[in-house]
Image 1 (spheres, rainbow, N blue to C red):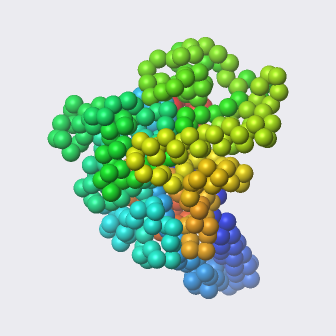
Image 2 (image 1 turned 60 degrees about the vertical axis):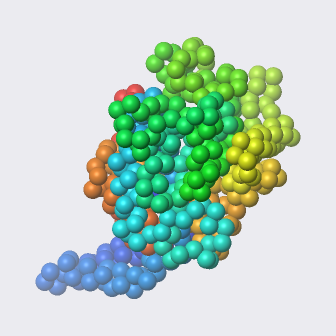
Image 3 (image 1 turned 135 degrees about the vertical axis):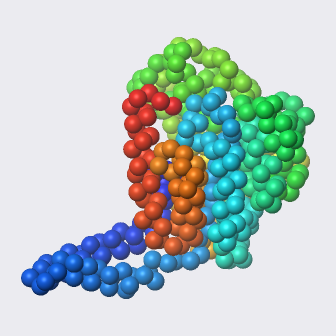
Length: 400
């Protein structure tokens, strides 16, 4: 869960905010007007309850389709500097799949969202970003076990060489599994050919560019993985082994932005708008062309790294030939633009720590909220605020 839960849908935010204001106003007015009566302060809850009943149907807007966003599914994500925020255990991932089924939802392919009016009443789609090896080792066998389709978004420069798929949980040897690294070419082809998991584009290098001269940090032996984009930028060609040792052990880290949405700053002058558009269009085109060649079919969906996008970037993705892109701020309703896919982060630390019962509740709340039951905000809102506080505390203590 992330701050996106709090700001994701303007429709939801307006309705929940007005509901809160109306309930508080009714309760406060009732308490003041009835204060002189015996138990008057408690009687003040009666107007508030009346407002709840009056607004009850207003808090249900059916028609949304949640798209759950995962990244790593691993029993040992220690090699990832961002594991705390983006990795779930295989046990949690399977619990999520069971919870989805028990809540009465049908897992559909992402491509089904192109005709949202034809979706089953309770539909949900699953995506995994970045193309980690553990998507093959753990996520794919679990998706197969539950018959749940999903989409994996991969960046070209992080695809490992090799055509031989490596062992998975389905092979019955969990102690000998490798958890670090990225998917290789053979694993990508095998998953895509399964008909269950579709491979789609996540760009080339998941990179960032400096956006100004301000220095925000300096690389050292402890933080070089945290500033991975500096290593990626300095690594020509394949970057799948970037985490083993630094290419740039010491350097200034400047303020930065996503490479596909920000203009690059250079000492001699910032990138022009035309230079930005040319660079981004070339990156998007290469991403689509080379991944399509690897899979032997046309890839159609582009996932924006770090969920960063603006209108011109979306236009460039369409020019490059993509049919849909991610990073929407809606609820995947029939009336929304079918070329824009909105997703909600799905982790297993609802309060900032692992707690299976709370995690199950959080997932049910996300499914309900993004399907149009806005009462679930009363569950997700507080969870999100606590998780943000824990994340800030960890950051202040220097934790990953």
